[in-house]
Amino acid sequence: MRSATLMHIAFSEAEEIVRETGSACRTDSERVLLSRARGRILSEAQFATMDMPPFHQSSMDGYAVRCADVEAQMPLQVIGEQRAGADVQLVVGKGETVAVFTGSVLPQGADSVLIKENAVRRDSGPVFGTAVPTEGKWVRLPGEDMRRGELLFHAGHRLASADIGVLAACGLHDVLCARRPIIALFTLGDELAAPGASLARGMVYDSNRAMLMSFLAEEGFEPLAWPILRDDPEVIASALRDAAVSADLLLTCGGVSVGTYDHLPKLMESEGETLFHKIRCKPGGPVLFGRFGSTLWLGLPGNPVSTLAMWLCLGRVLVDAMQGAAASRPFLRARLRSAFVKNENRAEFMRGTLACGSDGQLWAEADLITGSHRIAAAARNNALLVLPEGTAEFEEGCVIEAIPFGPLGE
Image (cartoon, rainbow, N blue to C red; front, side, top):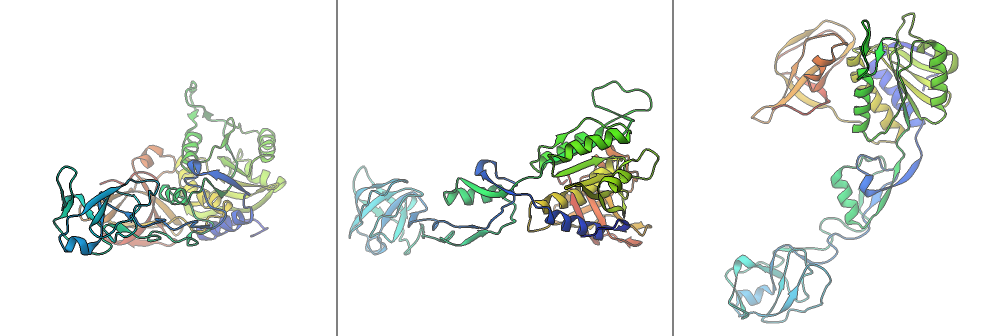
């Protein structure tokens, strides 16, 4: 962690500072109902509480049998049925069988299941097998899916829907997760009008607030959205002070560059601690990061494409670190459909489109339209193509990394 302001640093260095700082400001933990735990990050490792399945279990509808009886072509007398549910404790002896169903306990004495498709029974008479099952056929063994005490998920694991099913299968009602950071969201600028309001000449609608609220909702956050802040340093400082009392993270859009009315860098210097200001990347270079008292502060640029890129590339890194996420979000890798030349030395997050071909290959098409104000152009794409520092020629078919932000095309 750095105490001095760093200017124009490499994106990789900025990313590391964000990750280290977020990790040092971990949120506390809380118990979360499984029904609300999707996307949450575990605060402690989870172990299997029982064998699954917990007993020998039929995997098909049919008859619990002894293979030797079927092989000897014995008529099998049906002595009862074992439905899925409580064990009725039937025992299969020589020449006997029990009707079983998918998920039911396999009765004692049986070593396999004769599936209905291979069984002949007239009325309520005996059962005859038309095919001999091998021992253990159509039987699920105790613990074949998971064993009691087996590590299921490490601390720091982000829970997916299937993970929730695993925990529920263990009988868990809730899990200990990192508390999601409380985020106070601000957009700044005299030129901004709220969508739905009348628009005077020279004004633009505030698109960043709606876009970031949507991105945050995708992550499960319910941010505190403050009214648009005008370019008045006292008003801005007062609002941020108020928000910092209850928030873990101040997330601002606009006011971070070097213009006359970009008040945030000076405010952070005077009342907080700037960890870095400006990074070598396009779009989003003027990003600002530091602390405002004990609250972290990420200042995104005001241009909407810059906001989009820096939230995806730095904002998510920060909130993941604050929750103790064990793994970074993976990039996708795709082959480039068309060649292009990168003429700038700074890193670039180029807009592009990912699509999967009929051969299963993931392809990326770079969008050469530039301009960090062009949100409609960005919305026609579904990914940021990650281009490292340095000039380069990217040839057709070369493999590049990408960060998706929309559904993949076909």
